[in-house]
Image (tube, rainbow, N blue to C red; front, top):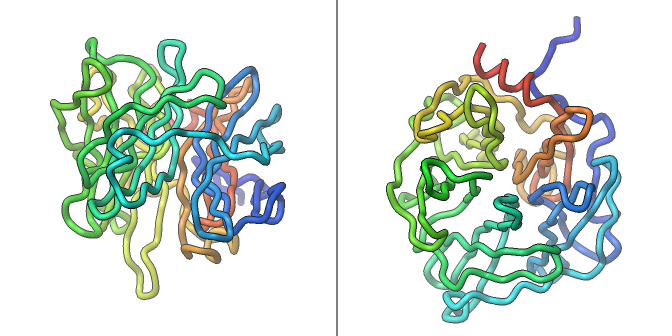
Length: 305
């Protein structure tokens, strides 16, 4: 008997591996995703064999087979980053809002820790960073695709206790000053005992904002990552309408269990295709890019039921 799953792996996984890149590299993972010029665009996190992180644009008409730009993007340092000994950026998320593409990412500042950085672009060639980053420690920021009650809104994950953190929602009048922060009341489950953070850009549905997020829990050998889904109130996304206690994806396949970080599934973006398929792009073991598929309606119905 075939079980109807809320999220199903693409049979041809993984869709991008280090061996498929047009250059030598160690990993390709944690890509932001959006639609740009009628194509699916991924902003790939690539670790070259010097273990430094670069970002490469990949585009696809079918959302499965990608052409990767061999040249990394050029992204100037923010004013905050210029004051650090080493600025390390990772895990881009892409939101189209009011005709502009906003890129949110984590920025590790030596010696202070992880902050949230943001930039704008209209062509994915030229990036204009916001001059200031958030205070540490915060990461996993996603910007909502429209204002809520006249304010910009984002999900993020402050993490003041080592190896623990959860989702909060914050608001801003101008994308620079953030406040009115409130935590989300997520259910504690056996797969969320350490930390949880946002993954995809929230998708607006009649029943609430649909968000795919990650959570972690320790096993006897590793800290395993899982993907879950939830619905947030349209006018107050700090209010969780539905958050099923079952995960929608766990590391089970070889390409999810073996690699730089074993037993990890991690998403930074999803794209709704013209036929209604929701392509959820996720990394397996912090090493390679994978694809899982569903529809917005199917995942929303699963949350509500």
